Image 1 (cartoon, rainbow, N blue to C red):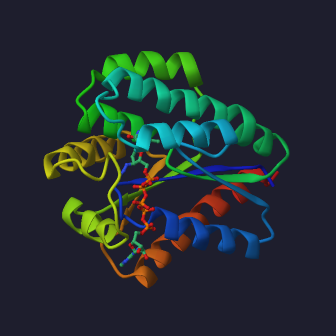
Image 2: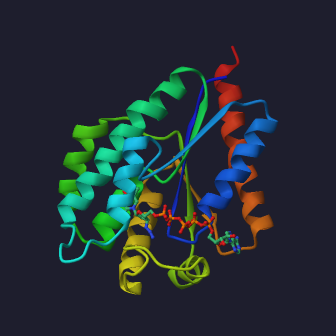
Length: 214
Ligand code: Z5A
């Protein structure tokens, strides 16, 4: 079966990490070999970058452009070391976040120019993109209240509500423009979220089967 690259996107507390486990188990039941990864992170070097971008450093703010470039450095590492080799071996890849996060967080939340992000994106990834992005849409207040339940907040989670409202707006704009992005209503109970995930995965499998038929 042709390998597929699936990405989970959305605000914090939307349930991406929870869903990644569910999707991995569901695909494995269909006899599909799955590799999971996350961003920023996934490889040893990219995980070091993750630590760098998530923690505040005393007396030295991380500049907006540095933050963006670090996200892309981690992404190139993850793409070249984990994602592309796994796909080449016929394995499916699921990533907790990918490049849409940079457009939403750095473009929307941080208000960096989208044209600058696009230029860096093109230089780093070219036309490479996921086959399916599951966008977990949630009211920022609800997502943050779920994330806060976990304890100390990182550098992103400490942002004001406006930051997350702007981030969500970019996600929603991208959703409207790209039919490889599927919306999941993440404000519902886990069972209802899982039902939406199964539907999206079944649609992907069916389209794959019809492509493979002579
Ligand atoms: N970032 C960026 O700025 N630019 C980029 O290019 C990239 C990332 C790639 C990564 O943090 C940060 O980096 C992120 C964006 C930025 N900023 N923030 N904040 P992360 O990976 O640590 O955080 P996250 O991706 O937002 O993950 P998260 O906070 O863990 O959220 P989640 O994975 O979507 O949610 P969860 O862990 O599955 O669930 C959270 C809690 O809610 C947990 O207790 C669950 O049991 C519960 N849950 C899950 N689903 C439900 C439902 N349906 N009902 C009730 N409770 C639920």
